[in-house]
Image 1 (cartoon, rainbow, N blue to C red):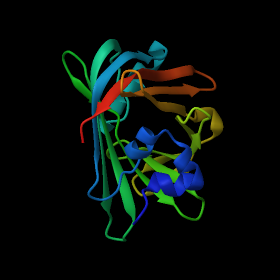
Image 2 (cartoon, rainbow, N blue to C red):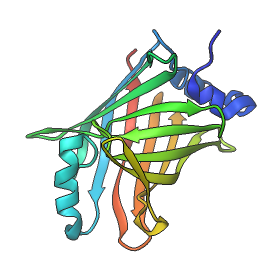
Image 3 (cartoon, one colour):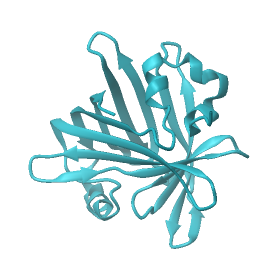
Length: 204
């Protein structure tokens, strides 16, 4: 049986994930994941970043809206490219009172460098390497590493001071039978770019 790109990246560590996270990240062609929940808190950074957030809405990447108790849906679907590579599409939708905003991406596995490749937005203006780590409690930590700006077919490595460093914590709450998520994006100069935190249930 073909393994998901996330199991390939984690290797033997995949079985140390909480069983529900193993199920969550077993995303293969014909086996999507759909979740619905609530983001308790969505927070942006300094107001100087507003033009960036607004510009990001055209790429389904970042957005200026903030809020609490925001309905949330997540859809992950794997598919094969013409070259035979397996990609996973991420659609993260935040349903604000007057508008739905997205934070989308397409991920794949780099067999040579043994990491996840993350193309952010649609069409993607930003690329990031991702490193996955299983924590002692069975939760998953995802860290962005090297990043590149994408202009057409050209990918330009960004200096570290321009990185939007992302850290994601995803776990499973057995008491409430739901997935937990906490995403933090920060820049070494500006500070927090944005963050969101909440829960969701599987519906796929």
